[in-house]
Amino acid sequence: MNFKQRSILTWLALSAAALLAGCERPPIEAVQHGFRGTGMVEVYNPRIVVKDLQKNVVPDAPAPAGPGGPASSKVYQNVQVLGDLSVGEFTRTMASMTAWVAPEQGCAYCHNVANFASDEVYTKVVARKMLQMTHKINADYKTHVAETGVTCYTCHRGNNIPENIWFTAEPEARSDGMLGDRAGQNTVSVAGAYSSLPEDPFTPYFLEARDIRVQGETALPTGNAHSTKQTEWTYSLMNHMSTSLGVNCTYCHNTRSFGSWETSPPQRVTAWYGIQMVRDLNNEYMKPLTEVFPAHRLGPTGDVAKSNCTTCHQGAYKPMYGKAMAKDYPAMYGAPSPGTAASAPELVAQDAAAPAVEVAAK
Image (cartoon, rainbow, N blue to C red; front, top):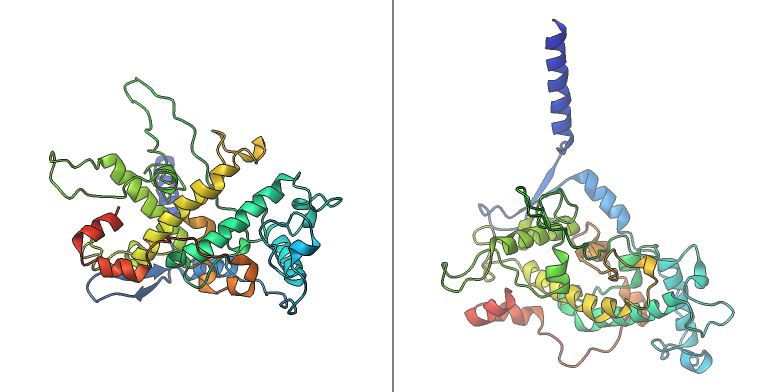
């Protein structure tokens, strides 16, 4: 075998190795969750599942505070959100939040330890807003979190800043050249599950309220305004959701008709409410904190960090695989706001009526 032949074989071997490196080695497990013949199957890599399980372990709850005792607002100064808690439960909650968010820095991460009542440390102001956001989720978004609820740990997992956040991308420089520009896509991106789909599906759907639509309901040109670009944004968002939850498209969709709400699994309704929830939280709780955060905590365009599906789920179809952690912490709940959204069963009941479905599907 001459040098040229050896070089070709070496090149072929390296190419094959590089190609196979992107494949998952067996065994791969498949779980059917729909009717036979519809492709309603979830495919799992056991090795990835083990890693996700390790990331979704719920820490043990401390012993509950004893009954009775004065309200914390009567003992401590400037307690604006948790003032109704007893001193014992208030102290228990503060200790838990420290373990969830700042296990290394301790109380000093949010407080001036010489004057705990002071709001001079910006993280205290942020923490107060985050508590209010947690109350909002647990009280008004049971259509998504059900009775499982969320705590600070759901997102933070022992980190000051949740590992999975996003910022609006910097505006792309426009080009009049022959090759044009990337149009916000056409490079491999994590957000689009390592595809060349749009790199920022979050701004259109988790900040703005654009329609999520793959196909129009009327033939062009009879008023259908849903473009190919919107379809690509939708696919990028769906890839993000699939990766975030560790599931296939069929977790929420019926392969017989991806657009049909009537034949979709109930998880699709839950996911729809999740999109509304994330958008609401980013606009109502995160954006107002823009001026509170220091410049080094803001994104390249000066915007505040925001949440998406991965922020809570982190590879699990339910955060912490559905273990109800919030029930052990009364401080994580607040009173429901007036005029909250319809429950998921009500939406499913409306699904048979075409006008109601059209509203829900956007």
